[in-house]
Length: 115
Image 1 (cartoon, rainbow, N blue to C red):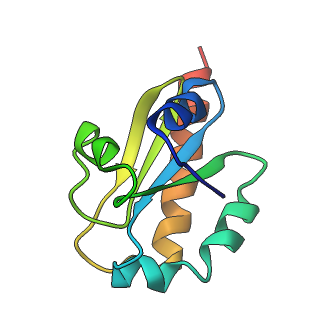
Image 2 (image 1 turned 90 degrees about the horizontal axis):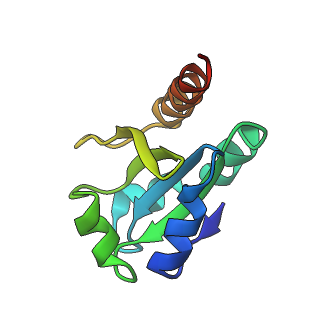
């Protein structure tokens, strides 16, 4: 997992053919704080299939506006600069739900690669 500091770094991170999942968060968000202890483990478990980047609402609000992210934490999967799928919910997110979203993102990316 790596924190994104600029819009340009974000655009570069999602531009290539690799699957990238962006976690949109804020330090003041209770649900974001609740998931942080296990997020590095989840990212490591999927490291052979995807990369996780983190986007802080306070540092890069323009990305939240660009992708219409209103609730946090939110997860958006990207490949080749395009959004594939997203996981947004008003309810607190569980580790199992996040892992399920990561698996689904991998499936979608693989399906798009298959002619």
